[in-house]
Amino acid sequence: MEDIQTDLGGNLDSVLNFFIHFGSEFLAFIVLTAIVVAFTFYFGRERIAPLIAGLYIAIPLYQIFPYEEGILTTPLLQISFYLLIVVLTMVAFSGLSSVFPTSGGGLIGLVILSAITAGMVIAIAIHILPVESLYTFSGATKALFESSQAFFLWMVAPIVGVFFFSR
Image 1: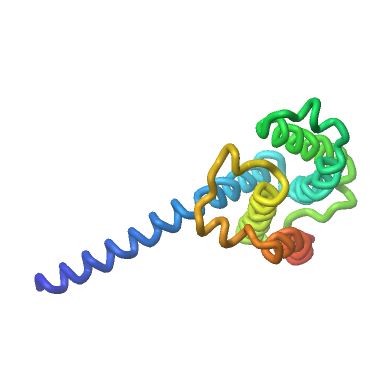
Image 2: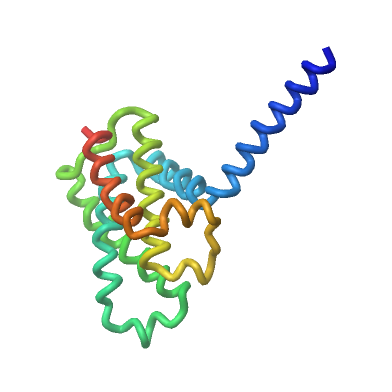
């Protein structure tokens, strides 16, 4: 009987360590997914497509901004400027919400679409924004998001997600 308890305790300990390690390795991804889920619950499911569109449109606007040297002198200002563009374009696209698809597929589809959007945000943060000077991503997160192929896939994933999980 004691062997069974020791074996069960060891298995439980290894499962618990796996989830703790997974949570610490992908903490940024988990937190951003929770933020996007909370965003869609608070503002409504029809706002996730304008959010994704805002994330896409903000990339070229951020990259071609001509006054970066004079105004955007710190990484925090650069990230804040990108987020301002995202918010402004999301508000602009929200006026066109009748054109955009709404999130369908229930709670599971919403969580998957939120996770895909969070992945896109992390890919943008690693490849375009100077987030590394403010936050150090774990090795597992970098392995999942840092390559140019991964960046392409994370940029395409929201389009596929909206196609499959929207009405």
